[in-house]
Length: 118
Image 1: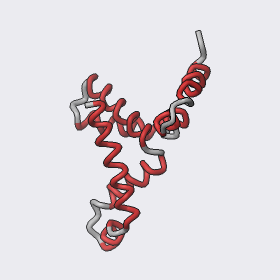
Image 2: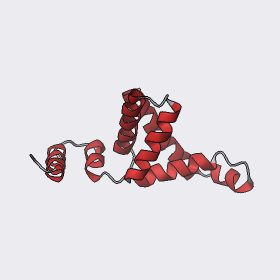
Image 3: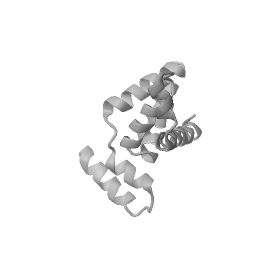
C-alpha cells in the first residue's frame, strides 16, 4: 500500500504537465484544515446537515481552494464581513478598489463552486 505522501506527490507530478492554475493550487494546498472544516460546517448548516450536503460542501471548498489562493480567500472573506459593517470604517473600506476586486474574486470562485458541486 502506497503512503499518502507518495500518492500526492505522484498526482502533483502528473498534474504538473497541465498548464493551469488549477494544477498548481491542488499541489500547494495552502488552506488550513480548520478553515476548510469551518467552511464545510457553515455550508452544511445552510444546506440541511445531510450526508449529501457534506459531499457538496466539501466539493465546494475544494473548488474554491483550486481557484483562489488562501491569502486571496482570507482577503475576500474579510471584505465580505466588512461589507456588513455600517460604521465609518466599514464605509471607507468598501469604497476601495482593492476591496471590491477581492470580493469579486471570492464571489467568482464561490459561483464556480456552486455550479460544479450543487
